Amino acid sequence: MMMSGGDFMSFKFSEFLKHELSKKTLRANELAKLIDKVPSYVTKLQKEDIIPNYKDLKIIAKAFGVNYEFLLFQIGIIDTNTLTHINAFGSLRAYLAEIMNLTDMTKEKFEVYYDFIQKNMDRLNDELTDELIGETMDFLGNDFIFPNYNNPYTEDAYEGYKDIPKVKFSTVQNSQSNVQSKMLPVYSDFEDNNNKEPVSQFPITLSVLTSKATDIANEFFWYSPTKTVSSDLYLIEKVSLNNGDKILYKSKDGIFTGIYTSAGDSIIISNIYDTSKDTSIDGPPVVITGGEKSTVFIIGKVISVLKAA
Image 1: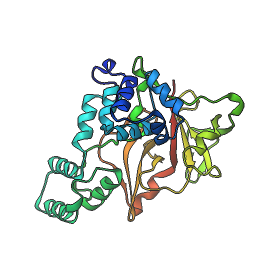
Image 2 (image 1 turned 60 degrees about the horizontal axis):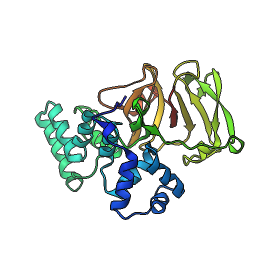
Image 3 (image 1 turned 30 degrees about the horizontal axis):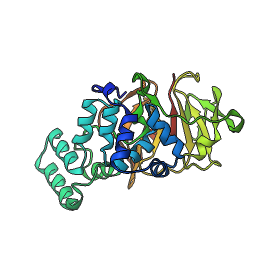
Image 4 (image 1 turned 90 degrees about the horizontal axis):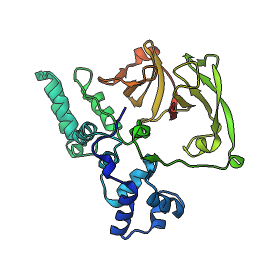
């Protein structure tokens, strides 16, 4: 869990926003258009010390020419160690350097390593992405040790925000009369190709589904690590997967989330999180070859996580 860092109480997002709008001669309605909100929403951000969601905050950081992860650090969402970790792996070049530091290099490994560098000379300074990490791991193979990398540009970057005093997280409030919702089954376990009997039901607001670029005709359900709805709830969509999707999957060791990458006949799962233990798994990604695919059952795509209070 990412905890607050530094002396975040000296930083007020509302003051930062007012200052940057003035400095950039950017009007509130122009910023509102960038984040697809009404101007009154930006006015509220200036008057109250609330933090927009991670997607809007990323757009705001870009509009002001501010480093996004440094802004997360200033707010207190990530700590100094996390910031250093993110900056250390900002490019493919830095990632490759750390691979070489961690791996016991032999002549054969060095030849593979050098071959990869030669084929990717024009990409060494590219921003590190999950897709680029997947390509690197696929090319170098299992003989190399890969550093653990957590992508900060996700909703999980806000995990732990409730522990930050005097900082509120922006939410969208709807009139109950205008809210359409449906009940979805809650599962605590799964079998290949078939869900087990649901342990409960839990509602979902239809606007949440339509706001996440999902197909409302697809199958949706909740997953709970326990047999109650008082734990974290994962909203799952049964859909064809794309590289970079966050997935829920089951193996003999339990049920986990991770970032999905398809590389030829192999599947790579990185950023692994143990849902029952509520903790990230350190170590290299899971690489599943054709003959091993029966050992892992991919349940579906994680749309969002409803954190327990």
